[in-house]
Length: 263
Image 1 (cartoon, one colour):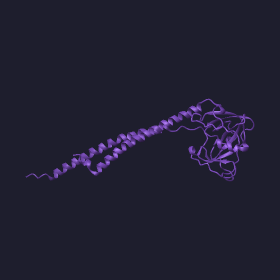
Image 2 (cartoon, one colour):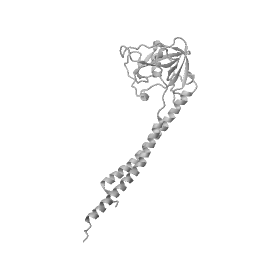
Image 3 (tube, helix red, strand yellow):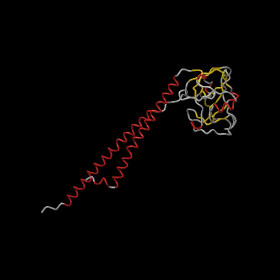
Image 4 (cartoon, one colour):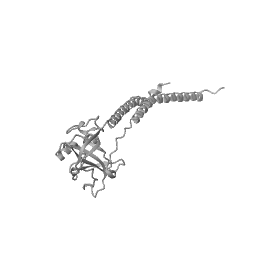
């Protein structure tokens, strides 16, 4: 009755089913790993955002690499903005996905060291892409600023190419080592995304807090893949029983047709 399982069609069907089951299980495991990674990152970001603000030099120094636990920590600094050596970061988008610039202003601390401060986003609405855009000035004189600490940007981490030959006072990446060479100063590792004081007239547009990654979606995908894996043998069994039933019905019908007529 089950000799048909050795047919080409059923051998292929069975092999495909046997391959699909472990593949779907592995995909579910991978999605679960992604869920755990994203959940851990969300918790790390939440812990950093909720931590008490500290003076910036308690977390970073010239040449320091910002760690994952230090990222998004709120830091404070006292000093003055040096707008004469301000640059803009090209090809950055705001919350509405509009392309423009980030404004990167050196902030000279009271001890002479420099903290790079990303003051926010401005639109690319200048007369040309080569002209330095008009930027609203920050508060003058000695001020206290607050911001979220961020690691240096690199091509490897961001995927953004650090192009050469750019227009004057325009850069592609926010990198403290690169800016230290340009400024000929001791620049603290990483940079701060400004949160206070808020700019007058809402320009530059402050950069919002990082959002949570959708970890529950990966959890749902993992369960989905495992349900698919469980459904493969069930589907194979249903097809098998249907084939057996159809063959039995066909054999019964053939017997009826070939039976001798009554005398």
